[in-house]
Length: 390
Image (cartoon, rainbow, N blue to C red; front, side):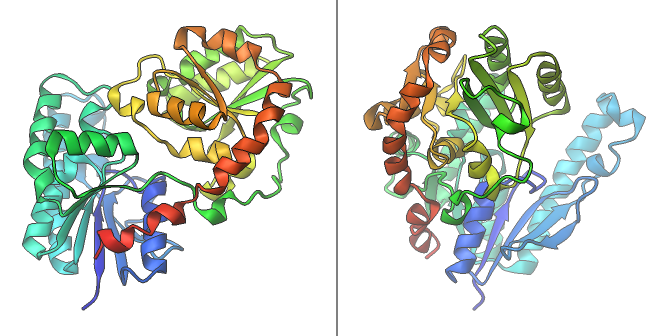
């Protein structure tokens, strides 16, 4: 029997690094014969393609995306709501039809909002359902009111139908065990793959050369999703007020057009702020190593962020960078203090902490950072997939 893993995603499948790593691992270790993901089509993307990892991508061209350019839809009025609702039904029907045709042995759900659809897909095909939330879903940023109560109810009703639950950090796993019970909750951290952390020369030059950063200045980098929910707008204003010969900020990643426009505006007018568009996953560590310190501070960290263990933390470590975080990112703060590989600051004191760090402070930590990174690669945790997808 062909072992086929069907992943269900409500995204364009362009930057789903955790999914890509999982597919590469499970196919490379012959855990599955085929891995297929069903996502959403967007203009400029193929409806179907097979990535170099062997992951088969199928994108559903929903009506709301096909008709996005129509002026009657851009106003997001009643007609847009009708088309959007019908598109959701269209997507769900397409997923179930594809599931019936593919006959997966395992269905993997990565988002709570898709858990009901994933459960139905598993039921009609006889597949095992695996729930792999990328954060503490019901406690994420911006979720509140009726929608939050609804999602809590959905998760409570359906999480027990999943054979296994895979979380991204120990405190999130503990939360799921305490709230829902069960002994089927596991942790596979967002670690970088061993091949991706090998540093390579940057053809366009390291940050100091490319952005003409003084050799005596300390270079901070924030990489990943850019936007107010990650407080990158706050970082812009903090660094704009810092001494421009001593503290420089590089923002590397992706965000909405409005967010990127604001960042580019700061980079064009403020000498110590720089923007680097997102780079391929296997080049992130190489680029980041051109900085001195990784940074993530957050003004209002929801429970999901307090328990978070993001890719960037380990990518900073593999790049040889100590890390500075705000204390409301409590799990990261705990790891940093235990290993003595960075600084923890109150959000209100972030500006003073950033200004106080010197290149001499950093050199003292680099050996500890390197030792910490040695034990932090994706392959170590991903071995658990052999059990999850048994």
